[in-house]
Length: 335
Image (cartoon, rainbow, N blue to C red; front, top):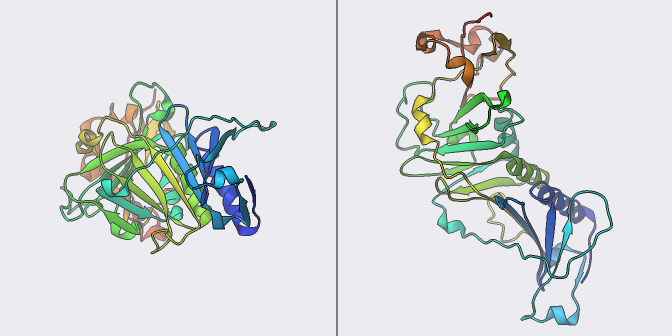
């Protein structure tokens, strides 16, 4: 095989490799007559990424006569993506290929990378798993007359109950109005939730942002994989000279049972009797945020959560009149 590439295509190729390197450490290349495919699968087999580059993507793309036959097996090899070393190709790598039919997914959402990055900035940088809860906009939420009414999508930090780590005690929830925050949102019927890794999601976000394309996320229900692909504006991608796919495994335990315990949005918190500084949330008029330290609020009497304790953030800051962020007042416990 022989190929050459330069210009804008070279920059796109670099973004492809960077994206795949953040998913796993080994890359499998498969050279077909009409395209070059890059595949990667992480060691726990919970995340799979692939990029397909059409023949026209390259300045020159040549396969030898044996590999050019229509019925021939594609040329393939694997390389490591991390550290600096001499590259040694394997003649018989484990083929990593996974195809999911988009039509099998009843629900989907499309979001611009910059908007997704803004929403994720409200969560701890150390967050490892994220839960998306999708409800039918036509059904309405139980508290449709309240502060989260009409916000049919919830993003929630997932914290492993088996871990005893202070950094994982901070719970954050965002209620989102899909009409205002998403390019497209399709979901009907009962609420569903999916929980998956944040690391690979951020890698795909960076890739799509660099390529200036939107993120299209397909999902079904708890325990079923989620599929992420670039969305090329109004185009379905059929005219693009490249495509990419990220498949993420989801947790088998639903988080919907915890939704009934959700409180109103809040950002103030304390830890071990010491006040914890709250960062400025990146929320819009169409997003609500609530955050708490679980070990602290569990020790606070229930009356402290009464709606009378809620005050508007704009009461304290005249410059944030358009923000709908609410802040809960929390007592300060001294040792």
